[in-house]
Image (cartoon, rainbow, N blue to C red; front, side, top):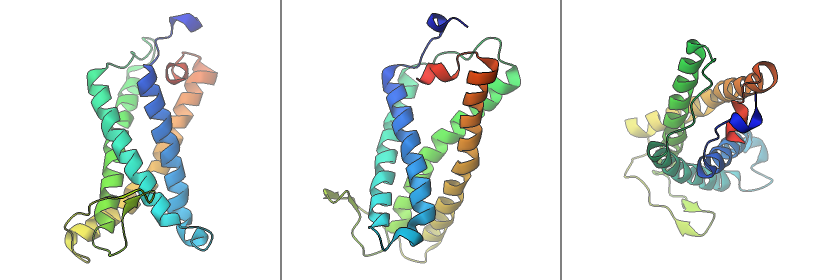
Length: 175
């Protein structure tokens, strides 16, 4: 495929994609390893601050997505692959908002300060410890957080498949 014929996402969409994507990978590692690393550094305050950053970036990304149409997928791409790509992207949009919000609700009943990198406090939701909402948020945060792993593997694998096997320019749209 001619490199010049590839229509890319705009620069704002590309920057948000990579910032959020890297942030999610860091969050998965911090979330899974927080008990092992808690004596080395304050894992959870960092995890919480990065999570809130991802939430703000994700809300802006969703707004940006509604205002700016993404480039079309290659015409030669099979319909089932297009449908799967669109479904996966919708699921990612849901998760990049739901996981940080569930984490925010999860930490709200606790007395520990909830702040953004020590710069300012983040208000807490009026949630009681042990309430149904707190329990749903806790389970949802863990389950959705772990669900990111196979979804990211699918997303990255598909991008690499299209880049190295199909060579249709799908990955270059986001570079």
